[in-house]
Length: 252
Ligand code: FPP
Image (tube, rainbow, N blue to C red; front, side, top):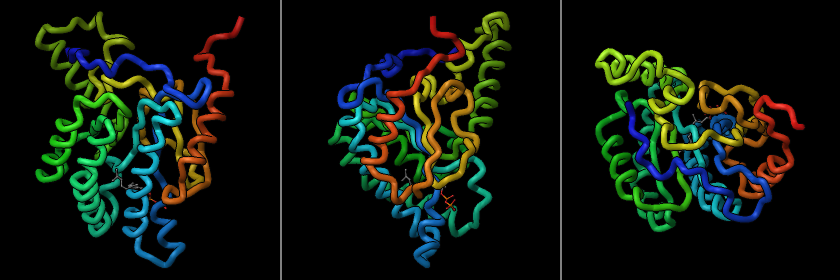
């Protein structure tokens, strides 16, 4: 069974700024392609603009009281895009990770990656490992980047490991429940997201954090990802603060 040794599991209260604001925000960064196409530019131009936006959003998290930020960078389905776009995105990830490494470490950001690494190239995996290692003692914003991530794939991989533990006698089938299964997920050291945001006007979750977002609040906004701003995130966090989360219960 996966050991829960990581202190990040402790869910911190919001740091500052927004009363009852979200502690964990997860974002589906959509609309890069349309943003570029509306300017007559290739799709990769939009992805580069989107990557720049990631930095601004990560940096505003402490002010907004967001302790955990999880972003969807590449899904298990995104391999279906053209070879040019996939290769361009992989190159962008490599450049972003190596360039941003020092800046994020200096800002006390702790970086993790979730998703299946098997299809990623060795150089990218090395950079991901280095960034995780270099930031592992940071205790500011916990940034999780979902790369070759799919919620169904994650649950399938988790179930496989769980079944292996059952077969090896480390876990009894009677112990498999809602507490045990998430310990095998990629996100096992993270709290569930409070707020999931999707940009670009599409109202679907596209295989993102399927298990973890069972009781998350959702915001589907029209802004294309490269136009998303700290101001808009602040407004969404304020709106979240006014929501009544009952988790299936009734207020007495
Ligand atoms: C979806 O927009 C976006 C992606 C598949 C890639 C997300 C990547 C980034 C924001 C840039 C890099 C991120 C990091 C962490 C460096 P889309 O291309 O599907 O847009 P469309 O729906 O308008 O075509």
